[in-house]
Length: 469
Image (cartoon, rainbow, N blue to C red):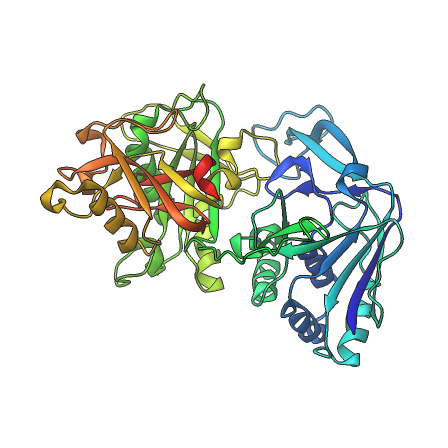
């Protein structure tokens, strides 16, 4: 038997941005988005049925093929909901207007189907509860794309005529889709209680590659293990105006660290200060330079905070410490040596450079190179620098690279050059180097290694050269 979800897009369009990049249209609808919509209408006594659904393997997806999808884009200025002294809107006092770009899909067929292989794992009562939830969902994506949803059990999982089937695959593909996973409901519940958006629960664990059924059907696709970073959350704060030079990365990450710790309620979570948690990753503060492009100049486009896997309460306290109380998520940062304040903005739903997207720093990829130099954990024996670099990866809980290249000079366009006195204070008088590493399996970032990995150095960026497969 198969658990089937039938979706009909009533306006024959689907308005939803593609994950962290709102310039891209999301198509097909992601099962994680549908799951979050079900949670949004569920009562407490209905959550147990959703917990049963999240334990199932990712579904088959039957939709109009990508080639048949058109895109619609809307641009304009939207009035903010928050009042502020600086607001100067002509018709809405004490408010401002921010530029927004919305993207949606125009499929040829407005019908979508998800099929979960059930094999009797769900009782008839659970299926009925899920169907009651589905029928209460008013829309998917934005409110401009109303939809009807209905669950049922089918014996013949043949999709509707004209739809193309996509299946999960362990091979890397161009189609990355967010799916629910065990524990996803708990994350949504915690975010719901804090009135936070559901997309914050969609870390690397939610990402699965899909491919069209029939692609390379005559060939057996080998299973490829993947390594997932210890940091499921990467909170990116984009510079609004001034963009500092990359060689200032350590003083900016130190300023961000002071601000976050000062804004987090006592007692501070151990993962935030790093004391009493030997061997466990703690919060890392990063500068994200413009790298990897022939025109890259190494300027810091954003700062970021990488949060390791934590209990939900600790995670949310740290998020509040990062973002403060401003619902508009505009952050002022005072930096030692500068008179002016630097304006940072947390705006994942706005158009922004690729450097300031989560995908730029998470891969997955097999080949990674330093965006900021790696500070070695120890002085290398017999001057074997590659072995010391590999050891730094193992010490950071990462896989040991299959191949290591080292260089005094940057190994990718725009990578940051640092003089010894520009390293974080904790790392000065240590040996440091640029490096390129290759792994035996795809690795999800962010990748942080070396003695300064929590303080702005030792950040790697994925490279998609010949070695990534």
